Length: 502
Image (cartoon, rainbow, N blue to C red):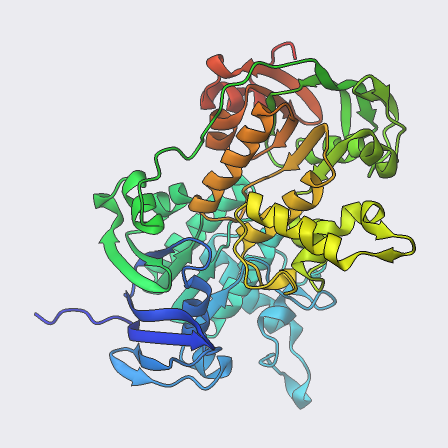
């Protein structure tokens, strides 16, 4: 009996960009009907591998094999024609076209006299969604679709082109739990139809929930390809980082001091109601809850990005004015936003300018900003946060996601805040960098900083928080001490099933 051959494979592929060796002798085999995970830290070579499969990059050496035969993709169009589709984390649809028009762009069915047959197109799109087990209106506009729905549209487009291989690159990073479950159901349907899937995620638990095999890259090199069933999460992490990761949540115990931040009966009509809590110096307080519970909105209001309608915010005993980030910053408040690329960084500016931008007044020498002072400040914080970079003058856009997160942290920590609000501190970064961020937050708290951490990662909440405040539909439903916290208690409060006095 003949062994099945892979639909798509890399054989001893290497790729360099100047002096940087992005891939070094990598091999990977994708089989029909299989969901295969690709794991590795930021900078391990995952993106280069994906772009090699997608025809964006051509290998310097080694081969790409399609159904066992060498193939040379000269561009993305070649890969698409060969049946390879990539579903990115944030798809780029045409917002002013309908869902069906996006699916069949350039291939719209025509009727009499060459006219666009919208009925046939909508019917075909509807059949695709039915196959995927998803309810979407083919005739509806693409504008306003959630990220999850946009990804489904891209998947429908891929299978309408008879794609035999689908590569999902961090597809769950911006999805809610319900949306992730729907995406997993779609992925399993695609595998049952005989398609090969490559699934890339920083979330270790997702790899174990969805995939049969996993290939691990480290520093551009192939480390292992193994059955997921034969691994533990610790095994996978150890292979990814190349060392024992003794503690992903290195919590330093600290005695809480005086109240640094007090929020009293804060209300923003239609968003959150009657929110009250305190954060003391030396403690990490987690704000937990489901996506849409109002956690980020509370943080934005405290910082002054959004105005509140009632209640008060006091920092170190000083009341803050509603809707004034400048006042909040001057009082010693710092906010690291959830979306670091859009709200936390200026991607075209240098690493050093992004770090120094919050302290321009301190860096002025008369009317001129001191370049030497800016460089010294950036160098200091890059060293403290173990930032990995080539030159501080490089655009921050060239950094990995984890290092971009460190730049945002450096930008705000350089202001010497009394209270740090950090929204989703480790979303989209690899497990090794995640441990570094946790170490940093724990050390800062131990040194007396008050930290309010918003996180959708339950293990992170349980591992790092001294107290957990849980929100449900705009209200605080529970306050849980570290010693009493369990996933079950947090989820019960987050879904409104376990209300307790907050």
